[in-house]
Image (cartoon, rainbow, N blue to C red; front, side, top):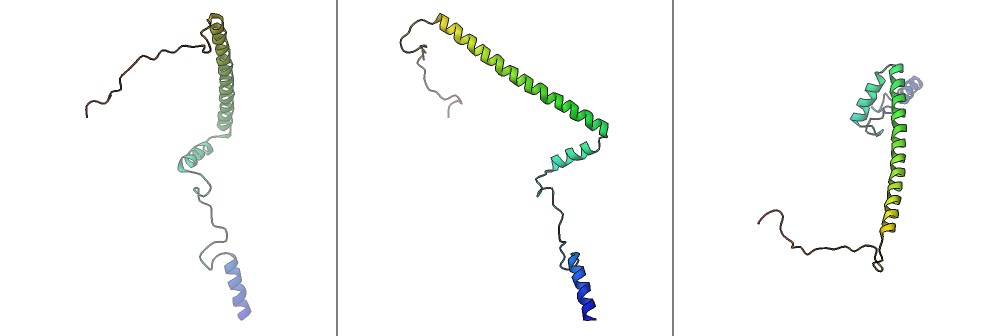
Length: 117
């Protein structure tokens, strides 16, 4: 009789019934690093059909590819523009001594811009 009670107790403990806590408690969204906005977006994506989801993924990949191309071309154009400006500056340069640029800073007065206090 004692053996049967002990066996039943062990079985209940093993299932997490005794003690009030399951063996492997469910993980919360916060513990997994998922905020409510990400969970909401995931629910919306899950509601799409496979075809709609595939189309969305393909369009996203195309958008990323275009973005990478635009970024690369922008960097190339910027480098060409800087090279052109440097060449023009070199062609027009006159010898000003050790400094390639003379910067004039006219005198100015410091004043309060926010009114009288």
